[in-house]
Amino acid sequence: MDSVGVAAAAPDAGPGPAWQSKCPWGAPSTTSISCSLADVMSEQLAKELQLEEENAAFPEVVAAAEGPFITGENIDTSSDLMLAQMLQMEFDREYDAQLRREEKKINGDSKVSISFENYRKVHPYDSDSSEDEVDWQDTRHDPYRADKPTTTPKRGFIGKGKDITTKHDEVVCGRKNTARMENFAPEFQVGDGIGMDLKLSNQVFNALKQHAYSEERRSARLHEKKEHSTAEKAVDPKTRLLLYKMVNSGMLETITGCISTGKESVVFHAYGGKSATEDKVIPPECAIKVFKTTLNEFKNRDKYIKDDYRFKDRFSKLNPRKIIRMWAEKEMHNLTRMQNAGIPCPQVVILKKHVLVMSFIGQDQVPAPKLKDVTLSNEDMKKAYYQILNMMQQLYRECNLVHADLSEYNMLWHDGKVWLIDVSQSVEPTHPHGLEFLFRDCRNVSQFFQKGGVAEALNERELFNAVSGLNITADNEVDFQAEIEALEKMNEDHVQNHGKKLSTFSSDGDPPIYDE
Ligand code: ADP
Ligand code: MN
Image (cartoon, helix red, strand yellow):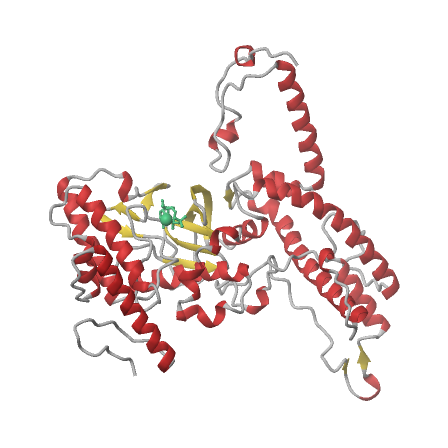
């Protein structure tokens, strides 16, 4: 096609549609792309057509892309949809369970077995077996939790004598089948028999179910395509559902938009709502940290958690999705410890799977600046330095923690003081690499303040000793590091020999203090 500059032809190169400029989840509006008019026309047409198609297949995905705000107002129209999505998850799980049973039946004791893995709806990594954890800590009734279906007990019958009803009873079974029909996908037309005393025979039910499966699979494939394209920008449907639930329950008033997209997490701002319980107060503004469920990014973080004895037993048994939840859990525990020690840091509001809600450091939707982005007066810089020195000591001694990612990127300047954030990777000092992490933290802090002109700033080795109370005398980095590693090794050997680690390190020549 011939290339005519379209920027000039466009009526005015102003911002895009209103929702786009307001939309914090939307891409920034780009201007003047130079291509032919015909190109634009056809592209637009193609987009429209695609949108129409998607609208028909997945209204929810498109709606989410265009309506980034999760508020009390727009929740009503979408809650049915959310409900449908939850049912969908249940349905998928049931379907997979059925597949597994079939697989088992077919394979029996045979040495050669076939696998239905490819037919499963829920990929093992996706499996969201929420049954195995305490969920939705809010004690308030969760309107989306399906009431537990009444089931026939394990022994397979109810009642006594001639009143015995088994699970094969035609009437019971028929009613159950009708009820289960509700679990079919939302798009699946089952008529309005639900609610009547319909009794579907097993045969009819199974045929229906079969049909529902194939319909579902067809749309799931479409869905997947769409999902991959948006997952990077916003959040996956399950997370969206969690967020909706928080707004729906009234705990959050509005989720206004994204304040940070990192490699491992996305952080949103929200206005707090009302707590279900009297004793808990939701902060007026909240930060929602969503740990990314794309697994690759977390692989290189294994060493933080794998060796953390608090999580060790569980680590080996978990699938990657659960490990990511553990990061969120770690952040919650660490923040709580810090809060208890009086260290300025976000206050935990609620943890729900891989989503952590905490108080917002900042005001009116504007997050407090990172230390790296703020220009402080000499006086404030010095004040910040001493505050951090103090916080590092408190963290080590009172919280028994090493931040492990401490730098000007994870310290915010707010209300005339420094606030620590991002503590999901923080470990206890006796973690096999705890002291190395501490040394790295010290190096970052020293360098930042020395460059920032704080003459009093200790060098990294002095700072390390000041924080840990250890007395490593090496006067150069290499030897210092070697001593740190020797201490860590001593601790590890102790673990090997005694099955438990030292409670503290000591390098004063005294025997190490054991926690008996
Ligand atoms: P990451 O692992 O992506 O670095 P962080 O916890 O550091 O995650 O959060 C990323 C960014 O989000 C921070 O640099 C900060 O700007 C913002 N942020 C995180 N938590 C809060 C909070 N409680 N209040 C205000 N801003 C926050
Ligand atoms: Mn960070």
